Image (cartoon, rainbow, N blue to C red; front, side, top):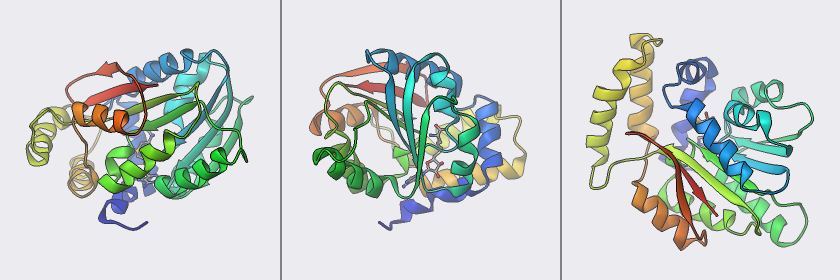
Length: 236
Ligand SMILES: C[S@@+](CC[C@H](N)C(=O)[O-])C[C@H]1O[C@@H](n2cnc3c(N)ncnc32)[C@H](O)[C@@H]1O
């Protein structure tokens, strides 16, 4: 599963920088945690989370503090991120990690769910990870996620571009209006973020997100949080 998009893990080999981005709430992790908790409350049973591109699981840990959580399965390319995860999640939760490409892992899991070989998740979470995929990887992943039997919810949290905005214009807008407030990062770190975005970030518009969700079998779309750059969507 190789593509130029797979260089996306580079920034996350040194988790410290991304951790400071979370600490500064620059990517609205506090609001997104509330959105994930809201998504989990739609289920009338303890959640079983599949967290794609989970990083260190910090978002899930923040979200699931007050929500019954039976299990959490985190998938990520970054060993450094996964190594930090166990300390953050509630102790009563069954925790599993898979180090690997989320498209490949989701496809393998979908085969197991379809054959009844493993209990499927009921809360599908992809937070700031799907924008790293190529269009074909994204479509494969959504098609596999849609195999999960109901009741289930899919919480897609990500960067998004404005309708009719080119990627170049979006990058320029982000660099000039969002990054100047990331004041807890050094100029060298800001340059690293810019380089990462230029090579690895391929967000889609809200309407494309809805179109893809619908195409692959998710029936309704609700916005849980939105600002100029970040969008949390709930699909059922
Ligand atoms: C921006 S971080 C998001 C981490 C966490 N979900 C959050 O919301 O803070 C993106 C994460 O996706 C992971 N990632 C990027 N591409 C991936 C892929 N193809 N398969 C699995 N993980 C991937 C990176 O290693 C990184 O941990």
